[in-house]
Length: 483
Image (cartoon, rainbow, N blue to C red):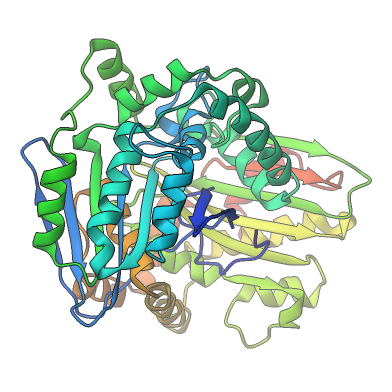
């Protein structure tokens, strides 16, 4: 699990992955992926079946391999307090056997085709995908269909996976960045589905039953919330034909009133709550602090402006030295005054809301007040004084990051799936470049005035944080221009 990421590399909070590569099962790193990457001139095609199931592809005739997968508009946000952790639990059981295939047969099929089968759960999505040679795409879609519709959910496998998930939870709890961001969501969206963790609390992991898993599938694994994605050498029509064969019988929507009611409740827009959570440990080696305002959704008109503004704040760690020429004013202040070990700005988006902020790590407990003060003063500056050079640098970095993120068929499939299942369409490369290119310093300042200036904040702080301002002082610094 990487402890440092690019400043622009914060897509949608935590994602837990489980993989079968040949006969081995492993845990992939938790990542926060980029938003809409700029494609290389390829066209995204989409078709919707009569039951509402969507197929979306980007065909590259020269590619010898393909990534195919099913993106489902349901993650931990689609759970209740009682069933929190169910989506992730299902992910673990996906490869433990179906009505047609035992776990051994499933692993053997993947091994024989030289393929890679993977799954992950996020707060808003559950994804199952496979990478294979083009000739093996039909077999890969067959396996994905079998996993999604016929998982055995064997009681013995459920009991075995409890211990596996509990050990995974222990490992995640050792990753301070992940813990801080979990607490940030919990306080910003407290008492709401988006505030829950992906793995769920320990008591839920120990008590989730087969009926809970079945009910989750019936409620959320419906055709209107699923997209079959293909990227690489698989032609669009071939994937449409395979979808007709394997997915046309999936119900268009939940089949009972209770399930429909739960699905409707999940779509309520979360309320951002200015608040904080602090876990003080004076023996800790560092203070880990995340500060955020309410951000923007994937489909918000300010989505790319938020990313450009985030890039202006930038990111920094000690390995970058004094950072006099990085273009980030905050990095110069922090490095010159030795206020922190590192900082990372982020803009995390969801279907209807988001978090925009910064993550700070410091081993200097006596200067935490200065660190937070100068950080929020930089945020305030963005409302009134942004140069053209800053904006152009940030735009260039954003475009480069988006292009770099599009590395291989799996990355393309990830982007198609996320966009289609979240917004219903995928932005064309020309649209992305046009929107980013048109952002000006006035747009950034307008965004900062509306989203940053005098706005409530959510704070998550863990470690040696005695020197951290009280919440009202932090909130007061959201309108402070000068020291």
